[in-house]
Length: 215
Length: 183
Image (spheres, each protein chain N blue to C red):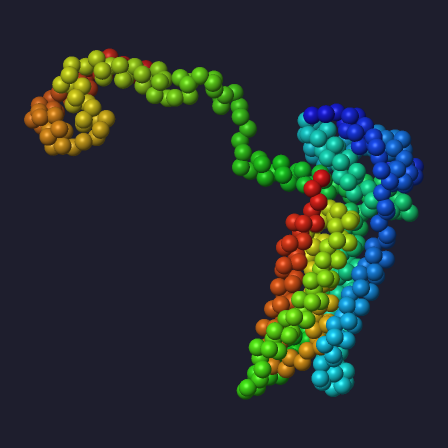
C-alpha cells in the first residue's frame, strides 16, 4: 500500500482544471425544457388525440395529465439534487404527491367506468402506435438524462437512477396522454401502464449500475 | 480529536477546480487528519483507517467538479466521506458473514505430508500394521472391513469359508488392538 502522502502527490501532479457543474435546479430546468420540446415535436408529428377538445373539459383527464407532467418535473429536480453527495435524500419524496394524481388517473379510469374493448376495434395497430410514441419519447430523454446525471458521478447511483427513470416515464406518458386515445380500460393498463412501468424498471435497473462510476 | 474544518477549504477547493495544483495539495494534506478522525469515529479499525482515508481522497478527486464553491466545503466533504465509509463498512460486514479469518490453528506447511491425512501418523501406522498381518488375516480385514463386503461376498472373492473368514477377522482385530493400543 502506498502512503497517503504519495497518493496526494500523484493526485496533484498534472492537475487539470475541471468544469464545475451548474446548480442542480438549472440543470434540471435544461432537461425539462428539452423534454417539453420533444413532447411538442411528437405532438406536431403525430397530432393531438382526436378527442382533445372534450378532454380539456374533463377534470379527470386534466388531473392525470398535470399529474404526469408535474411528476416528471419534480422527479427531474430530485434526480439532479440526489446526484450530488451533499444534498438531502428527502428530495426523493418530491414527486410522490404528483405521482399520486398521475396514477389516480389509471385507477379512476378502471374503477369508475370500466370500458370494454369495442368489437372490431383496431387494437393491434393502435397499440403499436402507442408503444412507438412511448419509445420515441423515452429513449432520447433517457439517454440525455443519463449523460447529464453521469457527469455528477453520483455516490447514490441507485436512488439517482430510479428517480431519473421516473422522470423519463412520466414525460413519456405525458406525450402519450396528449397523442393517443385509449378508451378501453384493459388497453389503458396493457399499452400504457405496463410500458410506463417497464420504462421505470429498465431505467432504474440499467441506470443504477451504469451511473456507479468506478473510482 | 478532529480539528475544526478550516474556513478556507472552500477557497482552496475552488482554486483546485481551476487547476491550481499547489492549492489542491494544501487542501488534501489539510483534510487528511480530519478524515482520519472521521474514519475512526465511523468505527474503522486502525489498520483500515489509512485505506479508508485514501478511498475518500480518491473519491473527492473523481467528483471534484460536483462541488459548488458558493456552498460550504465541510458538509460536502463529510457527505463524500460518509458514503465511502458506509460502503467500506458494508463490504466488511458482508465479508465477515461468509469468511473466517485464518488462525494459527489453520496454518499448515506446504509439504504434502502435513496436508494429506492418510500420510499422517496414526493412519500410516495402522496401514503398516495391517500390511504386517499374516496373509489370511490381512485378506479378511481388507475384504470385510476396508471394502465392507458381506461375509458371503468376501467368501466368494477369497475362496475361504465364511466361518474361516470370521475367525481370521477376529484374530486380525485382536492382533491390531495389541499393536495399536488406545492412547
